[in-house]
Length: 238
Image (cartoon, rainbow, N blue to C red; front, side, top):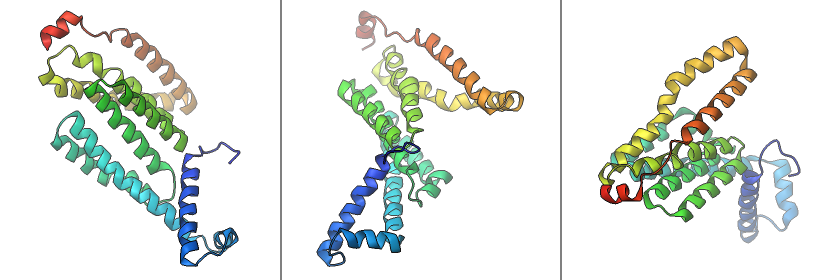
């Protein structure tokens, strides 16, 4: 589109949907040529908005299923059902699933990236991890905050979980992975009041800068501790 206020993936996806709509209309006799499609777009946007909303609704439903698959893959069937149930009633997700915006589509792509990251941890397949990165990139190309989703998965899950689970027998893989991932939720215990205090005293812009620098330093330092056990210990544990 020659401008970059929004990434282009969602626009190109809708362009494909409109193209399919034109092909169906051409066979049904609604359109005699591309000019008829353009004329309808300029005079009545209703079908175009409806198609966008249907796509978002479908992405919203698919995200619920991906949440179930991720929870089941990482922990258990109960965890998958709990994750799907929560996603199905999350206010922002339900609300935005009604709109022709890229938000829910981005969430779907980021969720698929997380599912593939979990699968890569379980299977150890590099190809699956590469696919996880691919979907994280697609999420970023649908909406820029998708970059944060991909980075969060890479820093907080895909890189931290594999070394941790190798220190314990296979029977405890789910437990150890759960402890590692719980850091996502536990971070809000200190991050929320700290962010609130920084915003009040230093403003929003400085808060982002201070937190970014602090988390970068902490992540880089703690990452030095992410070492797998010696192969002999892995053999004994196995």
